Length: 246
Image (cartoon, rainbow, N blue to C red):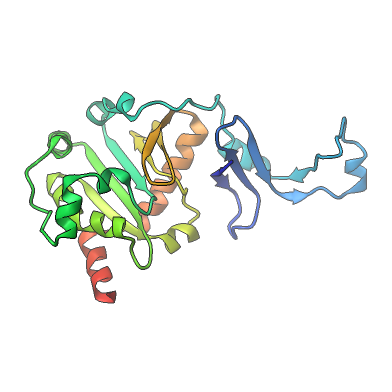
């Protein structure tokens, strides 16, 4: 089972840290092993397979989930949020490629060397234009490897169409994201209140989403947004940097 990073109070990236065990309601805690004999002798009902770690209280108050684990649901179940949010819709994209991109008609045209930036508005871009015209913000930060994967190069090529519709799309190197301890999963954050976290299979196909307003989850998403947005570069500037290294 995979682990999902929840948060850490360590500045050096060693410990302590909380993880969610994917597909369960269990939390994995990383911390300093308890070795003090006086403490160990006071522990109750200890099984031979158990061990114990110490973590700061602030780690639990900041990042431990306060509600039950959300259930996986279809992405279509949250489509209304993209029209009904009041202020901001913010996305972190961490995947190295998305099946939805590879299955789109634009993918083959891009592979054939066609310009895919000036295509007619689709339903997504029309909604972005309507919401941003009303004063709302659509924003994304996309993680990019060095060198960029094929899927990431496609997104760099297609981003100007979304930017023209009103999205503010920025890019951040994966190395910088890892240094910042950003999450390694995709999510949308609506109005700093609701987190929609994606689940993908190994091919980048969306399996569904987990929706939560758990305060700890929302706080972690807000902190990730603020750190990523501060360091990320606008699409055109990042694309120029990538082109200069090719």
